Length: 201
Ligand code: GLN
Image (cartoon, rainbow, N blue to C red; front, side, top):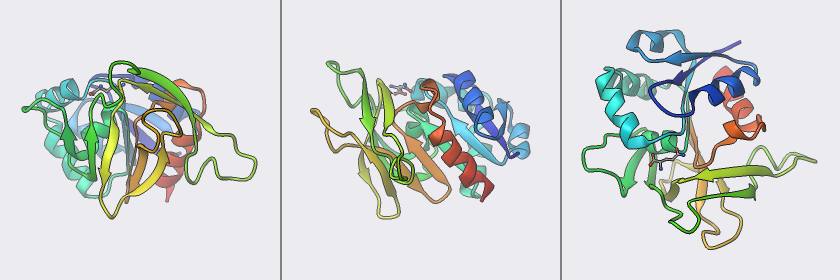
């Protein structure tokens, strides 16, 4: 079983640990630079990206984590984790740092006040397009959307309908995947399985 770390400074760490374990990986919490040496992949959970940014500095993890990611350590970021991985952030604090390993522009809290949190049944490329596969329940909680994706980025999912129809909410680039939504809270393990399979390759 591959060993996958969950960045455990802040956010919904336990849910990701459980989802990874149910998806064929051994999951460990990562709080120290040395723990980066023990893992084959890493999940950046949902939470609050500006706080996560601050804590990455406090725990001396920012630079070692970024170096590992640039070195090809597979990563999956959900919600705040997507924001942390991205190259450009709209509507963040001026002092917030981000890891800059995913060529997308994200807008924080993009869906606005009326629909701060919502759910939608989405199509996810490579997962829900399998014969007989059900759509995926996307749970969005003060979620970002991807405002712009660079040429090397594959779009995996978009908002299906409503005022934000067509907005990009899942992407992949090289060893990195990211979703605006939270599959770790639904019991649907398919995104985590997709990531574990990616780590295995
Ligand atoms: N709004 C949060 C942020 O900006 C993300 C919310 C989440 O991870 N559920 O970091």
